[in-house]
Length: 425
Image (cartoon, rainbow, N blue to C red; front, side):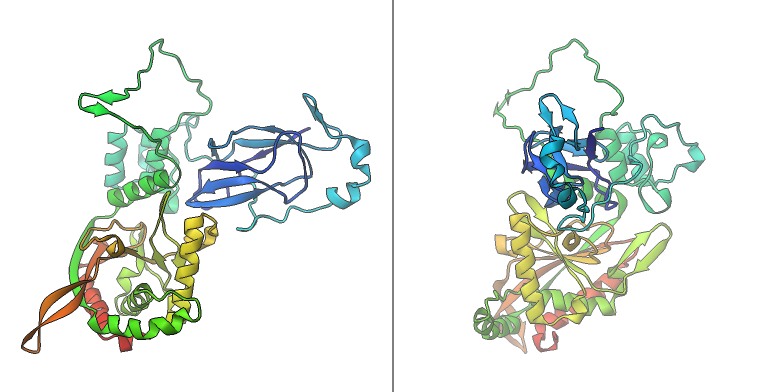
């Protein structure tokens, strides 16, 4: 029988993808591991490798189309099979059989994408309802479900211990049950091109922006968030950076303020562990590693690569990694694993001109630091008024895990490091 290659469940919380580009067409012969197309999933564009050797019998999703886990991407014809006028000729490939049909599927550039034997979708439209006592959801998620008219008893939770998350509710509310045919109401759907005040332009919420929208909604509905705002005098840091900048440029490294900030954040987190944590059920889980996410602005939206094990890296290594990850994020060729495993996030709007702002947590992390534009301001220093370079800092934290005093101590430690850059090592 022809082999239907379904969009696999890779176990990373990915439920759908967008077909960016097909690298094959119907009728093309393919080998195991050959890239079939580029698919956008969870903020990255990855190549999907072919699992079998044969020929493309049918492409089920057009470029730009959305595909969900468990749905067929392509049908692959194996030896001697035929669909319409496409056939794998046994005589033509018999001499190649030993060479190509024995090849193993070794996975893609982001790791082996193993197909789940049984796809377990989040949306259980045909499943019997859970008992009310079995439903695990926070009050915030229950309120969201009520607003979206979503029946919690019909939703399978993906959180720890089967807890239903805000993302589960949103996915359920927005998805059309696959087994239920769309019924026509007989009415003509009117999409307005203008309203009372002028013309309108509509853009679908998809890809990165849809993922970001879902994550931000889950964050704000799940974690009670507070933002503390302070300023750091980075006059000495700016001077140090200027001294080191030329030396790094000779090695092809663009030394910005970010490596210093990332390293200072890591040191401050060691002293204030509740900001390097997550809340899981009734527990605060302290991370004993320091993986700092860096929010990168791209044409398609916000992408957050993660610098792993910052405590084991010096400023030069951090600067090189930030530059590499930023380039890969903007070209959409970043490895999925470089987007995973963050324990704290830094977002910088200073380059665009923002000063103070209220960043939203990169849930389930308990802290995110917003960095604003450095400005020259008059400041009192040793009894005199001087013009100093001041950096606005905005810290948002999960008030379930972090008290205001803990957040203030973290900011004091961070500011102390930024104002004494010789201690950032």
